[in-house]
Image (spheres, helix red, strand yellow):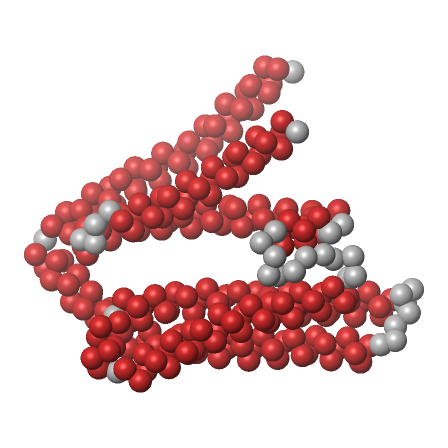
Length: 265
């Protein structure tokens, strides 16, 4: 039985290596080609032209993107919250033994989840786009001070709005599920919320978290490779690649150390 198992391991490794080795070689050749192309004068000129166009594009869209993110986040979040609330009020009273009771809760819970995702996405995008505004702060002061002021107000509104809408959604979830605990303004909110979840809810959280872990691993890998390759053309130094690498290290180490900690328990 052991010899069969070892043979299976060998076959699995050979099968995986047949895919991994060509990919590794191709990646090395591709990196070499990129390096040679980057050393060419024409490629450098093209990179400089693209860089100028990108800077101009980001300068133009930065403030408007902040404003748009704030508007979508606040209005979209409030609309989805009111929609879920209206569905809940229209469905009352409902007998807990009725099949419609479970269907109603699933529908409303789905809307709340969508609203939370939208709220977090728009908050992150607002921060990202406001980083563009900060990068070109001096130029905005010289060329468009009013737009700079409006984007700042929109950014502050999006941050406070995101926090308030998140609180409203969590409070409404507590109405649906009274056993839920925790305030969004509490530093230990995530821990308290997880503790108040039942076993099925925790299983869903763990499965979704592992999916996020794998996706983040792949994203960091691609991001690290891209920042290294693009450095040949744009000469922005090692900082972007180092930041991606640090995030990846923290991500992997957190998962590994936590897994070891749980195994010991």
